[in-house]
Image (cartoon, rainbow, N blue to C red; front, side, top):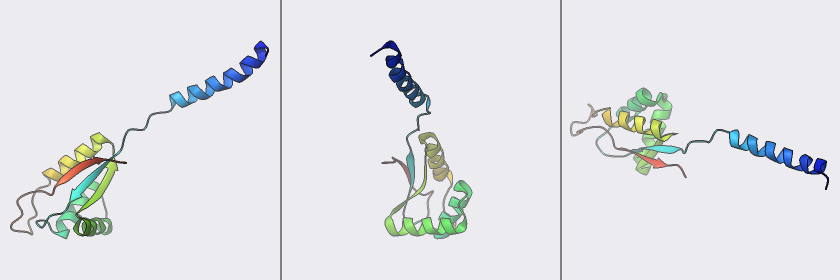
Length: 114
């Protein structure tokens, strides 16, 4: 193999490797999970999801049904920093005025996306 043949093989490989190294690395994703309880109404869940996530009423209702039926639902999948912000906002949202025995906000956790 001549010097010229060696260059023809190694230069494209180096370019390919450089392109792969320059790609931005994707941050890990996390689910924001809302947990069911008997102390919050559908109206509360729908309103909260509208205000905190910008979900339309239909999407809020769908998520309220899912959390009621399955015990939990994913309301957002995002970066860890954003997931922590949304968790804090849910926990700070307050109690449901429509349910007298409600003592505070809904439970929300964060889970790594598989």
